[in-house]
Image 1 (cartoon, rainbow, N blue to C red):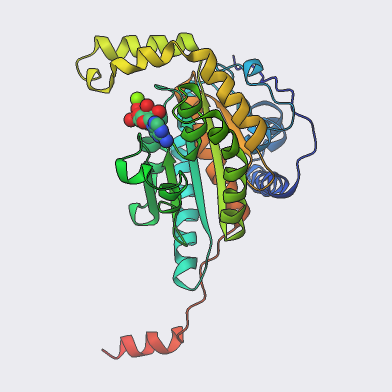
Image 2 (cartoon, helix red, strand yellow):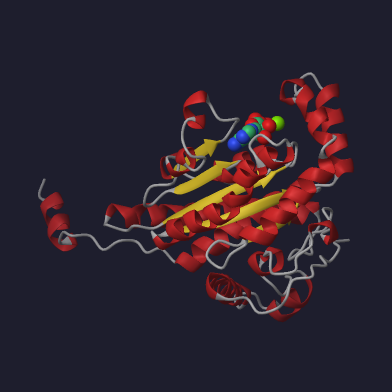
Length: 324
Ligand code: AMP
Ligand code: MG
Protein backbone atom coordinates (compact mmCIF):
# COMPACT_ATOMS: atom_id res chain seq x y z
CA UNK A 1 0.00 0.00 0.00
CA UNK A 2 1.47 3.31 -1.03
CA UNK A 3 1.91 5.87 1.63
CA UNK A 4 1.05 9.50 1.15
CA UNK A 5 3.83 11.97 1.28
CA UNK A 6 3.53 14.59 3.94
CA UNK A 7 5.33 17.70 2.99
CA UNK A 8 5.00 20.98 4.75
CA UNK A 9 5.16 22.92 1.50
CA UNK A 10 2.90 25.87 1.03
CA UNK A 11 0.35 25.80 -1.72
CA UNK A 12 0.39 27.94 -4.83
CA UNK A 13 2.99 27.04 -7.39
CA UNK A 14 4.19 29.77 -9.65
CA UNK A 15 5.91 30.25 -12.97
CA UNK A 16 7.29 27.16 -14.61
CA UNK A 17 5.96 24.81 -11.93
CA UNK A 18 2.41 25.84 -12.72
CA UNK A 19 3.03 25.47 -16.45
CA UNK A 20 4.39 21.97 -15.89
CA UNK A 21 1.41 21.01 -13.75
CA UNK A 22 -1.06 22.41 -16.27
CA UNK A 23 0.60 20.63 -19.20
CA UNK A 24 0.66 17.36 -17.29
CA UNK A 25 -2.96 17.60 -16.27
CA UNK A 26 -3.97 18.44 -19.83
CA UNK A 27 -1.97 15.46 -21.10
CA UNK A 28 -3.57 13.16 -18.56
CA UNK A 29 -7.05 14.38 -19.26
CA UNK A 30 -6.50 13.70 -22.94
CA UNK A 31 -5.24 10.16 -22.29
CA UNK A 32 -7.79 9.39 -19.62
CA UNK A 33 -10.66 10.42 -21.88
CA UNK A 34 -9.78 7.58 -24.23
CA UNK A 35 -10.71 5.03 -21.60
CA UNK A 36 -14.39 4.19 -21.14
CA UNK A 37 -13.92 3.96 -17.37
CA UNK A 38 -11.75 7.03 -17.12
CA UNK A 39 -13.59 8.47 -14.15
CA UNK A 40 -13.05 5.35 -12.11
CA UNK A 41 -9.43 5.19 -13.22
CA UNK A 42 -8.88 8.78 -12.18
CA UNK A 43 -10.39 8.15 -8.79
CA UNK A 44 -8.25 5.14 -8.00
CA UNK A 45 -5.02 4.57 -9.95
CA UNK A 46 -4.06 8.12 -10.85
CA UNK A 47 -3.01 10.43 -8.09
CA UNK A 48 -4.58 13.89 -8.39
CA UNK A 49 -1.29 15.74 -8.78
CA UNK A 50 1.67 15.61 -11.11
CA UNK A 51 5.05 14.40 -9.86
CA UNK A 52 6.31 17.97 -10.29
CA UNK A 53 3.62 19.27 -7.97
CA UNK A 54 3.99 16.51 -5.42
CA UNK A 55 7.79 16.56 -5.20
CA UNK A 56 8.61 20.24 -5.61
CA UNK A 57 10.46 21.85 -2.71
CA UNK A 58 8.62 24.94 -1.54
CA UNK A 59 9.29 27.35 1.27
CA UNK A 60 9.24 25.63 4.62
CA UNK A 61 10.07 22.17 3.25
CA UNK A 62 11.69 19.95 5.87
CA UNK A 63 13.77 17.05 4.56
CA UNK A 64 13.59 15.13 7.83
CA UNK A 65 9.80 15.03 7.48
CA UNK A 66 9.87 13.51 4.02
CA UNK A 67 9.48 9.71 4.21
CA UNK A 68 12.08 8.05 1.92
CA UNK A 69 9.78 5.03 1.60
CA UNK A 70 6.78 7.00 0.35
CA UNK A 71 5.52 7.11 -3.24
CA UNK A 72 3.96 10.55 -3.83
CA UNK A 73 1.83 11.00 -6.97
CA UNK A 74 1.72 7.24 -7.57
CA UNK A 75 -0.71 4.85 -5.97
CA UNK A 76 0.33 1.68 -7.75
CA UNK A 77 2.62 -1.11 -6.53
CA UNK A 78 6.07 -2.12 -7.77
CA UNK A 79 4.76 -4.08 -10.76
CA UNK A 80 2.55 -1.17 -11.84
CA UNK A 81 5.45 1.23 -11.37
CA UNK A 82 7.76 -0.84 -13.54
CA UNK A 83 5.07 -1.12 -16.18
CA UNK A 84 4.56 2.65 -16.17
CA UNK A 85 8.31 3.21 -16.45
CA UNK A 86 8.50 1.00 -19.54
CA UNK A 87 5.40 2.56 -21.08
CA UNK A 88 6.69 6.10 -20.71
CA UNK A 89 10.15 5.40 -22.12
CA UNK A 90 8.85 5.79 -25.67
CA UNK A 91 7.13 9.06 -24.83
CA UNK A 92 10.28 10.55 -23.37
CA UNK A 93 12.20 9.40 -26.43
CA UNK A 94 9.85 11.23 -28.76
CA UNK A 95 10.00 14.49 -26.81
CA UNK A 96 13.76 14.29 -26.72
CA UNK A 97 13.89 13.76 -30.47
CA UNK A 98 11.62 16.76 -31.03
CA UNK A 99 13.86 18.93 -28.88
CA UNK A 100 16.86 17.75 -30.86
CA UNK A 101 15.11 18.31 -34.19
CA UNK A 102 14.05 21.80 -33.10
CA UNK A 103 17.69 22.74 -32.50
CA UNK A 104 18.61 21.73 -36.05
CA UNK A 105 16.36 24.59 -37.19
CA UNK A 106 17.77 27.27 -34.87
CA UNK A 107 16.02 26.15 -31.67
CA UNK A 108 18.04 27.23 -28.64
CA UNK A 109 16.39 25.20 -25.93
CA UNK A 110 17.76 22.35 -23.85
CA UNK A 111 17.00 20.51 -20.62
CA UNK A 112 19.40 19.84 -17.76
CA UNK A 113 18.71 17.08 -15.25
CA UNK A 114 20.81 17.38 -12.11
CA UNK A 115 20.88 14.31 -9.88
CA UNK A 116 22.21 14.57 -6.33
CA UNK A 117 22.06 12.04 -3.53
CA UNK A 118 24.03 10.13 -0.92
CA UNK A 119 26.08 7.08 -1.96
CA UNK A 120 23.84 4.17 -3.03
CA UNK A 121 20.84 6.48 -3.44
CA UNK A 122 20.36 5.10 -6.96
CA UNK A 123 21.92 7.73 -9.19
CA UNK A 124 23.41 5.01 -11.38
CA UNK A 125 20.02 3.36 -11.83
CA UNK A 126 18.57 6.68 -13.00
CA UNK A 127 21.27 6.88 -15.63
CA UNK A 128 20.54 3.34 -16.87
CA UNK A 129 16.76 3.31 -16.63
CA UNK A 130 15.75 6.90 -17.36
CA UNK A 131 18.54 8.37 -19.43
CA UNK A 132 19.38 5.02 -21.07
CA UNK A 133 16.06 5.17 -22.92
CA UNK A 134 17.07 8.31 -24.78
CA UNK A 135 18.95 8.62 -28.04
CA UNK A 136 22.63 9.03 -27.04
CA UNK A 137 23.23 11.64 -29.74
CA UNK A 138 20.91 14.01 -27.94
CA UNK A 139 22.28 13.38 -24.45
CA UNK A 140 25.23 15.06 -22.78
CA UNK A 141 26.14 13.12 -19.65
CA UNK A 142 28.68 14.21 -17.04
CA UNK A 143 29.66 12.57 -13.78
CA UNK A 144 31.41 14.93 -11.38
CA UNK A 145 34.13 13.49 -9.16
CA UNK A 146 36.52 15.22 -6.79
CA UNK A 147 37.99 18.03 -8.91
CA UNK A 148 41.25 17.47 -10.77
CA UNK A 149 44.24 19.77 -10.31
CA UNK A 150 43.19 21.71 -13.39
CA UNK A 151 39.61 22.04 -12.23
CA UNK A 152 40.79 23.24 -8.84
CA UNK A 153 42.77 26.01 -10.48
CA UNK A 154 39.49 27.53 -11.76
CA UNK A 155 36.41 28.86 -9.95
CA UNK A 156 34.13 25.97 -8.91
CA UNK A 157 31.54 26.68 -11.61
CA UNK A 158 34.09 26.44 -14.41
CA UNK A 159 33.78 22.70 -14.97
CA UNK A 160 30.00 22.94 -14.61
CA UNK A 161 29.72 25.62 -17.28
CA UNK A 162 31.84 23.51 -19.62
CA UNK A 163 29.47 20.57 -19.22
CA UNK A 164 26.17 22.38 -19.91
CA UNK A 165 23.95 20.88 -22.61
CA UNK A 166 24.07 22.42 -26.07
CA UNK A 167 20.82 23.50 -27.77
CA UNK A 168 18.65 20.47 -28.43
CA UNK A 169 20.40 18.28 -25.87
CA UNK A 170 19.30 16.74 -22.62
CA UNK A 171 22.17 17.33 -20.22
CA UNK A 172 22.55 14.99 -17.28
CA UNK A 173 24.69 15.69 -14.23
CA UNK A 174 25.53 12.79 -11.93
CA UNK A 175 26.55 15.02 -8.98
CA UNK A 176 27.04 18.69 -9.77
CA UNK A 177 27.91 22.18 -8.51
CA UNK A 178 26.09 21.18 -5.33
CA UNK A 179 29.00 19.00 -4.23
CA UNK A 180 30.74 22.32 -3.61
CA UNK A 181 28.28 23.06 -0.82
CA UNK A 182 27.78 19.43 0.31
CA UNK A 183 30.95 17.33 0.62
CA UNK A 184 32.95 20.56 0.69
CA UNK A 185 30.87 21.99 3.54
CA UNK A 186 30.73 18.75 5.54
CA UNK A 187 34.51 18.26 5.40
CA UNK A 188 35.59 21.91 5.46
CA UNK A 189 37.45 21.50 2.18
CA UNK A 190 37.42 25.29 1.79
CA UNK A 191 36.85 27.98 4.43
CA UNK A 192 33.27 28.57 5.54
CA UNK A 193 33.40 32.10 4.17
CA UNK A 194 34.05 30.60 0.73
CA UNK A 195 31.37 27.90 0.64
CA UNK A 196 28.76 30.11 2.26
CA UNK A 197 28.97 32.51 -0.68
CA UNK A 198 28.37 29.72 -3.16
CA UNK A 199 24.61 29.39 -2.68
CA UNK A 200 24.06 32.86 -4.11
CA UNK A 201 26.63 32.21 -6.83
CA UNK A 202 24.83 29.01 -7.81
CA UNK A 203 21.46 30.80 -7.90
CA UNK A 204 22.81 33.56 -10.12
CA UNK A 205 24.49 31.01 -12.38
CA UNK A 206 21.34 28.91 -12.74
CA UNK A 207 19.18 31.96 -13.39
CA UNK A 208 21.42 32.80 -16.32
CA UNK A 209 21.38 29.22 -17.60
CA UNK A 210 17.57 29.21 -17.51
CA UNK A 211 17.39 32.63 -19.20
CA UNK A 212 19.59 31.25 -21.97
CA UNK A 213 16.99 28.57 -22.77
CA UNK A 214 17.78 25.60 -20.53
CA UNK A 215 15.06 24.06 -18.39
CA UNK A 216 16.78 22.91 -15.20
CA UNK A 217 15.38 19.94 -13.26
CA UNK A 218 17.15 19.39 -9.94
CA UNK A 219 16.52 16.10 -8.22
CA UNK A 220 17.61 14.97 -4.79
CA UNK A 221 17.44 11.21 -4.32
CA UNK A 222 16.33 10.87 -0.69
CA UNK A 223 17.21 7.58 1.01
CA UNK A 224 17.13 6.56 4.65
CA UNK A 225 20.25 5.65 6.56
CA UNK A 226 18.89 2.12 7.12
CA UNK A 227 18.35 1.61 3.41
CA UNK A 228 21.86 2.82 2.67
CA UNK A 229 23.25 0.35 5.18
CA UNK A 230 21.32 -2.49 3.54
CA UNK A 231 22.54 -1.48 0.08
CA UNK A 232 26.16 -1.24 1.19
CA UNK A 233 25.86 -4.66 2.87
CA UNK A 234 24.51 -6.08 -0.39
CA UNK A 235 27.42 -4.60 -2.31
CA UNK A 236 29.87 -6.24 0.05
CA UNK A 237 28.17 -9.60 -0.15
CA UNK A 238 27.93 -9.95 -3.92
CA UNK A 239 31.07 -10.43 -6.01
CA UNK A 240 29.35 -8.69 -8.93
CA UNK A 241 28.64 -5.63 -6.74
CA UNK A 242 31.84 -5.42 -4.72
CA UNK A 243 33.49 -3.17 -7.31
CA UNK A 244 30.89 -0.52 -6.51
CA UNK A 245 31.82 -0.51 -2.85
CA UNK A 246 34.21 2.12 -1.64
CA UNK A 247 35.60 1.90 1.93
CA UNK A 248 35.20 5.68 2.05
CA UNK A 249 31.42 5.21 1.86
CA UNK A 250 31.42 3.93 5.46
CA UNK A 251 33.39 6.98 6.58
CA UNK A 252 30.86 9.19 4.83
CA UNK A 253 28.05 7.38 6.66
CA UNK A 254 29.48 8.65 9.90
CA UNK A 255 28.79 12.18 8.69
CA UNK A 256 25.16 11.36 7.83
CA UNK A 257 23.58 14.06 10.06
CA UNK A 258 25.97 16.69 8.73
CA UNK A 259 25.06 15.71 5.17
CA UNK A 260 21.34 15.91 5.90
CA UNK A 261 21.92 19.37 7.34
CA UNK A 262 23.93 20.39 4.28
CA UNK A 263 21.17 19.07 1.99
CA UNK A 264 18.55 20.97 3.99
CA UNK A 265 20.59 24.17 3.51
CA UNK A 266 20.77 23.49 -0.24
CA UNK A 267 17.00 23.02 -0.42
CA UNK A 268 16.36 26.12 1.72
CA UNK A 269 18.66 28.38 -0.24
CA UNK A 270 18.66 27.18 -3.83
CA UNK A 271 15.11 26.04 -4.60
CA UNK A 272 14.28 29.06 -6.72
CA UNK A 273 11.44 29.88 -9.11
CA UNK A 274 13.88 29.63 -11.99
CA UNK A 275 15.27 26.28 -10.87
CA UNK A 276 13.33 24.54 -8.09
CA UNK A 277 14.42 21.33 -6.35
CA UNK A 278 12.45 18.10 -6.40
CA UNK A 279 12.99 15.64 -3.56
CA UNK A 280 12.42 12.05 -4.72
CA UNK A 281 11.86 9.44 -2.00
CA UNK A 282 14.37 6.80 -3.05
CA UNK A 283 14.15 3.81 -0.71
CA UNK A 284 12.13 2.04 -3.39
CA UNK A 285 14.22 2.02 -6.53
CA UNK A 286 11.30 1.37 -8.85
CA UNK A 287 9.49 4.46 -7.53
CA UNK A 288 12.56 6.72 -7.72
CA UNK A 289 13.13 5.77 -11.35
CA UNK A 290 9.51 6.34 -12.26
CA UNK A 291 9.48 9.67 -10.43
CA UNK A 292 12.61 11.03 -12.11
CA UNK A 293 11.40 9.83 -15.50
CA UNK A 294 8.05 11.52 -14.89
CA UNK A 295 9.71 14.76 -13.77
CA UNK A 296 11.73 14.86 -16.98
CA UNK A 297 8.69 13.95 -19.04
CA UNK A 298 6.50 16.60 -17.43
CA UNK A 299 9.11 19.27 -18.09
CA UNK A 300 9.59 18.20 -21.69
CA UNK A 301 5.81 18.22 -22.10
CA UNK A 302 5.68 21.78 -20.78
CA UNK A 303 8.47 22.82 -23.16
CA UNK A 304 6.34 21.38 -25.96
CA UNK A 305 9.09 21.08 -28.59
CA UNK A 306 7.80 21.02 -32.15
CA UNK A 307 8.95 19.17 -35.23
CA UNK A 308 10.61 21.92 -37.23
CA UNK A 309 9.16 23.14 -40.52
CA UNK A 310 11.55 22.20 -43.32
CA UNK A 311 13.00 24.80 -45.64
CA UNK A 312 12.36 22.86 -48.89
CA UNK A 313 9.24 22.06 -50.90
CA UNK A 314 8.16 18.57 -49.85
CA UNK A 315 5.95 17.93 -52.90
CA UNK A 316 8.67 19.03 -55.24
CA UNK A 317 11.22 16.79 -53.56
CA UNK A 318 8.83 13.83 -53.74
CA UNK A 319 8.45 14.43 -57.45
CA UNK A 320 12.19 14.73 -57.95
CA UNK A 321 12.73 11.52 -56.03
CA UNK A 322 10.12 9.62 -58.03
CA UNK A 323 11.88 10.63 -61.22
CA UNK A 324 15.10 8.91 -60.15
P1 AMP B 1 30.97 8.55 -7.01
O1 AMP B 1 29.86 9.44 -7.49
O2 AMP B 1 30.49 7.52 -6.04
O3 AMP B 1 31.78 7.99 -8.11
O4 AMP B 1 31.95 9.45 -6.15
C1 AMP B 1 32.43 10.68 -6.57
C2 AMP B 1 33.06 11.35 -5.39
O5 AMP B 1 33.53 12.62 -5.80
C3 AMP B 1 32.09 11.58 -4.25
O6 AMP B 1 32.65 11.15 -3.05
C4 AMP B 1 31.91 13.09 -4.25
O7 AMP B 1 31.64 13.61 -2.99
C5 AMP B 1 33.23 13.55 -4.81
N1 AMP B 1 33.13 14.90 -5.36
C6 AMP B 1 32.36 15.31 -6.38
N2 AMP B 1 32.48 16.64 -6.55
C7 AMP B 1 33.32 17.08 -5.60
C8 AMP B 1 33.83 18.36 -5.26
N3 AMP B 1 33.48 19.46 -5.92
N4 AMP B 1 34.70 18.43 -4.24
C9 AMP B 1 35.05 17.33 -3.57
N5 AMP B 1 34.61 16.09 -3.83
C10 AMP B 1 33.75 15.97 -4.84
MG1 MG C 1 30.16 6.24 -4.58
